[in-house]
Image 1 (cartoon, protein in one colour):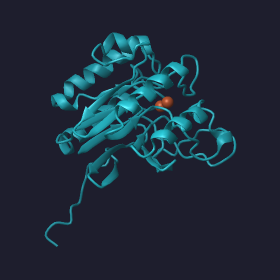
Image 2 (cartoon, rainbow, N blue to C red):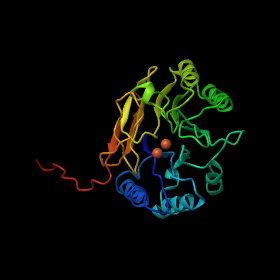
Image 3 (tube, rainbow, N blue to C red):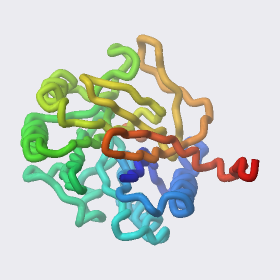
Image 4 (spheres, rainbow, N blue to C red):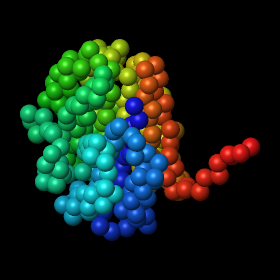
Length: 265
Ligand SMILES: [Fe+2]
Ligand SMILES: [Fe+2]
């Protein structure tokens, strides 16, 4: 199975911090069109827009439609801290919600069970998984326990360097950890975005990965206090190859389109 994981396009009608988020997102989609139209699944893990405005969702949808993706590659979407749940729902009426109206759902693909979580909480950049959402999540994990489970969420569920500097990660880390511990034999990988950095590792026996934003990549923060920084690094998205006994995550630096293949050597 070939899966595309793109995150944090932060679409806006105007330039954002000197970067055209629309143009970069279009370039990522063009790169996908040339190289990865044979993929099985395409996921965009939140911060679809920067301010959550209706105009921004409209632009995002127009860009997606213009690329003319194969039907199976219409992106599975979740929301991030920069999104607005109600505005999102007006434009993406086919994206499923749970019984409480959160934008979370699951999908079965062959013997794989994908769970998409909603960690948005209005008025904060931190991630939330309230008791209602936890209950729904546990229920889905139970449903998928005969399959290989893959989880997509916007916020990082663990601190990526130090707890003291992780001011905008998931707030309910302990509760989330308890849930994961119960199902960590079935959960094969955790995918998230949010911090705009390329990172991968292992948590509670579960591997995880995150691509940079297609809009504005940041640099890792190894200090004890919260801070953000950029070095104008290339944006990217991830290509994930899942086989029976392996899962490999590749980073695609989609602005680099000149390839010098060493053919004929
Ligand atoms: Fe973001
Ligand atoms: Fe975010």
